[in-house]
Image (cartoon, rainbow over all chains, first blue to last red; front, side, top):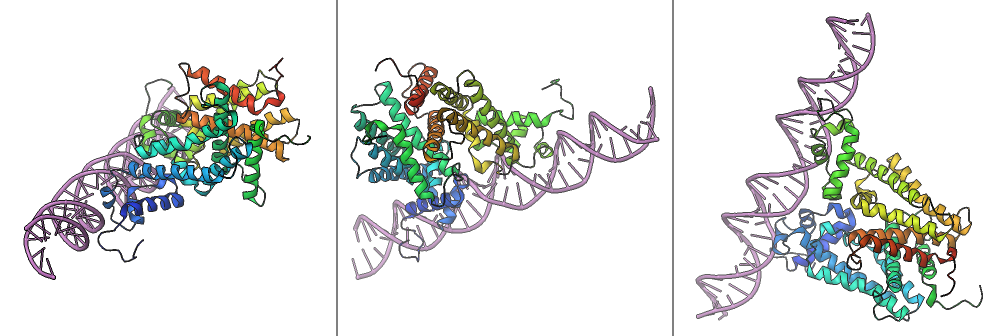
Length: 211
Length: 211
DNA sequence: TGTACATCAGTGAACGCGCGTTCACTGATGTAC
DNA sequence: TGTACATCAGTGAACGCGCGTTCACTGATGTAC
């Protein structure tokens, strides 16, 4: 990474391993992730990772944590320009979520592959919690509730937003909608998310002049 | 299965292997599925499955096919009592979908784990197609379109129904909502699905007397 | 500035494991006569 | 009904493979004096 001519000591093997893991993931999928493969890709002996990660699960959990942090950043940056409490704001959040999943499908899958992760990994747990707080906040701005999880209807709105967005992202990256997209898949995805959220969360939308 | 005292020839090893695979799946999860493990559970040598399935992927694809057929049956039977074109009908369909996922979480996951399956497996492909046709039919009954996938708005309704239901099922069996359910999880799930679908598909719902 | 030494991080061989696959075999079944 | 024989379905040993883990080692770095 740094000087290309690596000496005996790597310098930042920890970061290099995480990067190698992500590359393996993107190229070969979640199933193919092994410590030896990651070490191989990082150009290091297969025993070296033990100095930085106690297990494959620990390494992948760190990767998942970073992914959740990036997901949260993607959502926040996408909806930064919209006013909280508007349908446009929810749409933007969903666009960020789905854009992340599309850009990093294997990483997105890893984030929910609990059997490959360490459930006690603090950074991953916190990052997931923070990311999942975003739809709650977004719906709170819409309904005016301080905690929309308190009563059934706003809670259903939060679950609807999250389920709809997550389900669409999952099915999309699985290729279930491939036959529906026209030539311009990006545009189709963008327009479809707009329609999905607008039809499920019309209450905050500006009423059209007439039908 | 038949006479308990098995002779050298099994009788119906093919079916026994599928059943053993399902048991392995339910008990140990998708990751743990191996031909040797399935053979072991079926009480047969590890070379025996080769007589019935050309590969692990072929066996799992057959299992996934059966699962898709059962999913379709679950949905159909759940919404058989409701009039197509009503919100109640959509709710019942979603209840069937989610009930299947809850009752068979590992099997449900396998159905979407494409890297473990054979993409050319005819029965699985057909079964998946048939199951996924159900939301299209349900929405068609609602909107009156013969093919709701033809134009954007009804298409969005189909995608919304499927994404919402699928996303909720996924997140639910992952345990993401565990902290929200009260003592009676079944009741919570049932009521939540009702709310989710009713708030996303209110157009066909009988208008309440007053707010 | 130079030397001794502790510590750290990576190496490479070795371990045991479970996997899928192959193969000669063998027990059971069904069919021809 | 009885015998010969082909076919089928399961056995068990063997193969090579990649995995995670361990361990004695060694090269590089940093610190004490």
